[in-house]
Structure formats: C-alpha cells, structure tokens
Length: 462
Image (cartoon, rainbow, N blue to C red; front, side, top):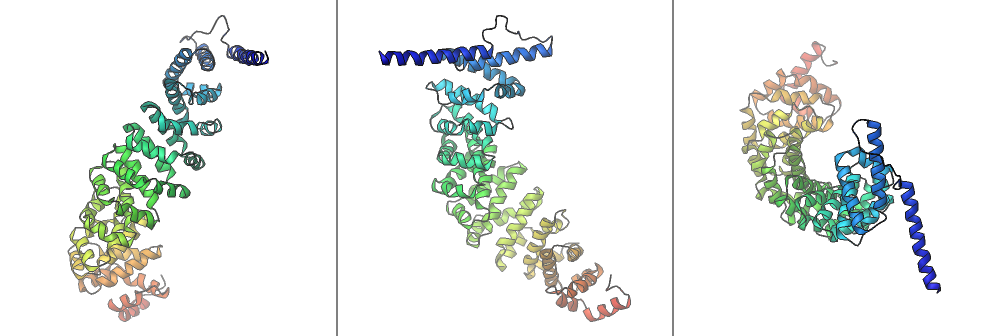
C-alpha cells in the first residue's frame, strides 16, 4: 500500500508540474495569437506565444509530440536570429540541454541542432556551460548520428573560443572524441572538430594530452585530404603547437609533416591558409635539427615563390625561414641561386619593421658568400635601401644593415653607392653609440678623409 501511494504521489507531482508549465506558457488560452503580417507588434506577440508553446511541449506529452515541437522550433530558429534570442530568453536552454541525453536518437539529434544555433549567438556560452551542455555534446561526438556529431563539433568549436571552456571540454574526454571525429566524421564535422582543436591548442596544459592521443598524425591527414577550411584549421593547430616548442617542431618533422605542408601551400589559394601553412614551416625551421630535412624536401626551391607571389605575412615568414636555414655557404648559395635576393631587396621597403628586420637579416647572411654578392651587384638598386635602414629605431635591423654593408664594401662600386646614399653621416652617429662594425665600415669608405670633410661642413652634429 505504501509503495502504491508513493508511486501515485510521484505521478501526481509530475502532473502538477505539467499543469503549472501549461498555465505559465499560455497553452490553455482559448484564443491564441495568430501570426500576421498586418501588425509587427501582433506578429511579435504571436511568435513569442508560439515559442512558449513549443518549449512547453518539449517538456510534456508524448515522444512524437516532443519531436514535432523540436522540428517546428528548429525551423523558426533557422528563419530569424531574433527567434534564437527569444528561445533563450523564454527559458529554452535547460529543456534543450536535457534532451541531449534523451533515450530517443532523433531527439538527441534535433536538440543538438537547436543548441548549435544557440551557440552561434554571442553571450549564450556561459548559460550553455551552466546548464551542462558541454558534457553531453562530447558524448554526442562519440556516439551520436552523423548530423548530431557534426552539430556537436560545431557547438564545441564556438564554445572553445573561451579558454576556460576549452579546459572543461578536455577534462570531459573531448580531445580523443574530437580527433576521432577528424578521422571519421563528415567533411563539415571534420572542419568543426579541427577548428575546436585549433582553439584547444592555445592552452599549454592541453598540448600534452594532444600529443599522447596522436594529434600530429591526424592533423597531417587532414592537411592532405580535408576540405580547404579543414586544412586551414589543421595547419593553424600545428602552428600553435609548434610555436616556441622544439618538441613539437621535431615531432612534426619525425612524422613526415614537411611534404604535406609544402603540398598544401602549393594548392592553397587562400591567403589565410598560406599564412598558417608557412607559419608551421617557419616554426619548424627554428630548430636546427630540422634544417637538413627541410632542405631535402625542397623548401629552398619554393622560398622564392613565397617571397614574390604572396601576402606580406607569408613573405615575412619566408624571410624568417631564410634566416634560419642559411647556416652554411652551400645553403646560402642555393638560396640566392633560387632567386631570393631580388624579392628580399623589395621587402626592405615594407611598411612593417618586422618584415624589414627579417629581410635585412636574410640578406646579411646571404652576402657572406662571394657569388651572392655578385648576384646583388647585378641589381640596379639596393645599396641605398640598405643604407636607409641605418636610421632605423630597430637595433637588430641596424646591426644587420651594418653587417650587410661591410660584406659589400669590398666592391668599389658599392662603396660609391654607399657614400652617395649618405652612409657616412649615419655611420658617424652609430660610431658614437659603439655599434658593432661601424668604425670598420667607415674606414673602408675613406673614414678619416670623409670625417674631416663632414666636420668642416658641420654635418656630424645633425
């Protein structure tokens, strides 16, 4: 008898809750508002009533009723972003999150579609987290339908832009689930999962987990076979992981990453994709242990193309690679013979100090080879541009410019161009600051005689 009474009390409580929900939502109103285009106020009220009605039906009634309500709600949300905001404002997030764990697969799938729409709107991330949306989304990655898997990956991509939420996703097994989606998901799911990994790779403590789960091989697979967006996200993830990390730089090389990265750069027409792709190579080149592999994969032959027909960011990264790999006479000679000197000279006029810095550093290294200096002399200009860098506020740029001019000063033709470009005035000022190499260069330019002439003209103090 007690057991029966307890069971009956529980049912009555559920019915009481459903009645309260029906009264609150307005489902019992005899004259429900009708959607109309005649009055914007009336139409808004009708939409609001419809949303309330649908949200109530998600929580009471049969399975078929809930599925129909979900379907209609998704249609409304797809029609207007304002309705998405209205769904959240009317308390729609909690019931939708609960449906992510429903026993019926189609209900989980449709709930994931609705939650994904909410995740694309700003300011709802915290509410989704507070209602516990992240954990069931990770579960859908592991066991949901193809559509549910894709929407879950898209939701996580939106939410992991916030690093704290990314840590939460990782703590609930999100890394292996995302990597598996990258392997087996639909093209849309793969791109979204790769985008999520891109966000997560910015969190230092998560990188070890990514390494343990074999992220490199999966990311290289996506770079070779994914969609354009998928390849971009995968390359950006590798760029994040290899930034200032010799461990990741060598791991990428050891798993054969150079060849697919070079192929990706060959076929990519998107400037953003090119920038992240060459960004990975730039990071990899920073480790001296990787230089031999980069050379064997033919990176020198592609550097000139990167320096000529690319965005400023790609050119800057290519110049940085030249600086990193130009460690021997043979390599420097091959870089110059590949046609890198002319585009590097053009970069001296770049608007950014960083581009100028890498360009002059690369040229300074290349000019250490006699045959490269001869190639430079074949150019009609260049000396004056290097001289102008002596007036830079960037000390690295100044030091590299002095080094480059010292290498070129063995040519009488170059010395004349330096003097004509006003090198002596700049060098006199730099000599007072004890900049390395300035006194030697002044002497090569006829320092004593020129210094005397400048003093007579009262130019040293300018």
